[in-house]
Amino acid sequence: VSSYEKFVMDADQLGTLHHLAQGVMMDTNGQAMEALREVGPGGHFLGCEHTQANFKSAFWRSDLFDYKPFETWAEEGARDTETLAAERVKKQLADYQPPPLDEATREALEAYVATRKAGMPDAFV
Image (cartoon, rainbow, N blue to C red; front, side, top):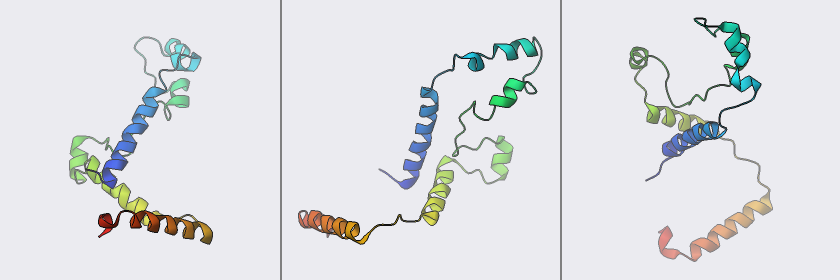
């Protein structure tokens, strides 16, 4: 069973896997030892220069997951992942602009489709 919504949800999960496959950065920035020394025991990292420089790219955030508190999520309609995927599909289909296709390419594609359909007459009743 397949649907546009399922495809969008799968693509979102692939984004997560892509982020995880990049691994943990072991360079100076990834280790953040200077930030640890700067903040020290009992401190917080929110005002730390390292945090300010890295917080936007440090985490993967799904576009299909609502990160709000449960109460807020429920008050706003309790839209689940499938609902958010359906909304994205509707928007993408509405915004779609077909790429330009020259006449020769269009005719070649139509001829190919006609040939394939003729080879499978029962499949396109």
